[in-house]
Every structure is written in structure tokens, then in C-alpha cells.
Image (cartoon, rainbow, N blue to C red; front, top):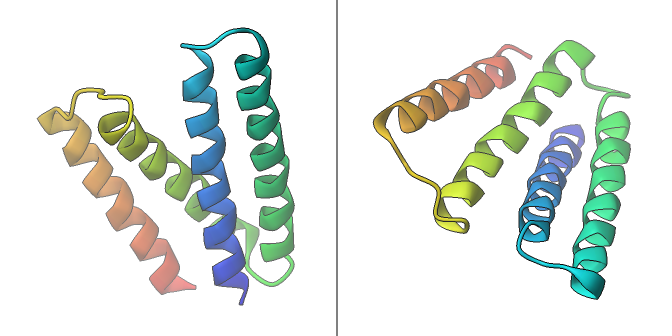
Length: 107
């Protein structure tokens, strides 16, 4: 169950980066709406991470959480915000995913 909570925490991190990305093209009420969503997912992500670390080692949970967020943020950037998918971005994204899998398999 702790791994599911940790994955949800990582997905909340992806959600708050998505919300943050949407703030750059908005203003007024819509900007505040995206920022409110950002704050909600930011807090929820941290709370879920704290819950997951009650049973998972912090040295494993934190890197997995940040890894899920980093991978998700890059993928959202590429597929939603049309950022470039260069060879090196994809290469290092792949090595990051491999590292996350390695950490998960060791704990």
C-alpha cells in the first residue's frame, strides 16, 4: 500500500507542475485558479510522501517521488507544452527511469 501512496504522491507532483505550466499563459482569475490547483497538489503530494515514508525508507521514497515528478514533468512538457524531445532529453529521461526502477527493486 505504501508504494501505491508513493506513486500517487509522485503523480500529484506531476499535477502541480502541469498547473504551474498553465500559469504562464494566463492572467486574472484563471491564473489564480491554476495557482490554487498548484497549491492543492503541492500540499497533497507532500502529505502523501510523508505517509509513504512511515513504512518505506526515506532514502528510497524521496528519490522515487522526485523521479516520478521529474519524468512526469518532462513528459508533460513534451506532450502538452510542446517542448522539444531531443535525443539527450530522451536519453537522460530513460536513465532516470532505469534508476527509479533500480531503487524500487532494491527495497
